[in-house]
Length: 301
Image 1 (cartoon, rainbow, N blue to C red):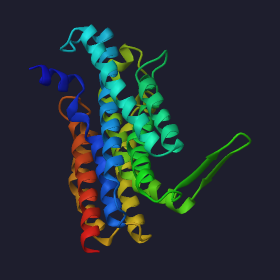
Image 2: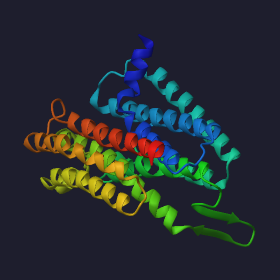
Image 3: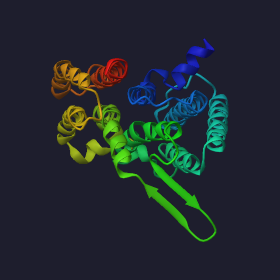
C-alpha cells in the first residue's frame, strides 16, 4: 500500500522519457562498438532516475497546494520523501563527477538547477511557455550527452581546461552534431508529451494563471504537435543517409502509420482522459522501434 502510494506520488508511469533516452544511447554505443563503463553508467542512471522522481514529487507537492488533491501522504511525509530523494540523487551525481571530471559536474549542476526551478520558485518554468523546450532538451539531449561523454574516450566530444589564468573549451563539431541528431527523436517526442498535456489542460491552467505554450499558440499548438513527429522521421532518414545510423533503422518509418492515426485522433479532440494517451503511445512506438533497430544494427551491420 505504501509502495503503491509512493509510486503514484512520483508518477512512475511517466518515467519512460528518461528511461528510453537512456536506452537509445546505450543502443548507439553498442552500434558504434564503444565499450560501456558500467560502473559510471549505473551511477548515472540511478542519479538521473531518482532525480526525475524527485522533480515529479516536487511538482505534485506544489500543485496540491492549489488544486487540493491528495498526495497519499501527509504533507510533512511527502516533503521528507522529496528531501531524501534529492539527497540521494545529489550524492550520486557528485560521486559521478568525482569519478569523471568537471564537465560532468558542470552539466549535472545545470540539470539539477533547472529540474528544481521547473516547478519551484517565484516563476516556475512549468508555468511559462518554456516547459516543452526544457523537458525536451533536458530529457532528450542532456541525458544522451552525459551518457556518451562518460563512455566515449576522453576528448571525443569536448575538452575543458581550467586554471588560474584561463578557461579553455574545445568542442569537436562532428561528434557533437551527431549527438544532436541522435537526440532529436527523444527531444521531440518528450516535448510532445508535455505539449499534449498542456493542450489538454489549457482551460484549467488559465484558471490558475498558468500560461503555457498552447495559451500563446492557440490552435497552432496541435500543428506543432504533428510537426515535431514529422521532424523525427526526417531526422532518422538524414542520419541513415549520413551513415550515422544503420540502414535497418529505416524500418522505423513503418511506425508512421500508427503515429499518424494517433495524431488524427488528437486533432479531433484534445482531452486529458481520452486522447492525451496518444502522445505516450507515439513516444513508445518511435523510441522503442528506433532503439531496438539501432541495437539490431550493432548486431548485424
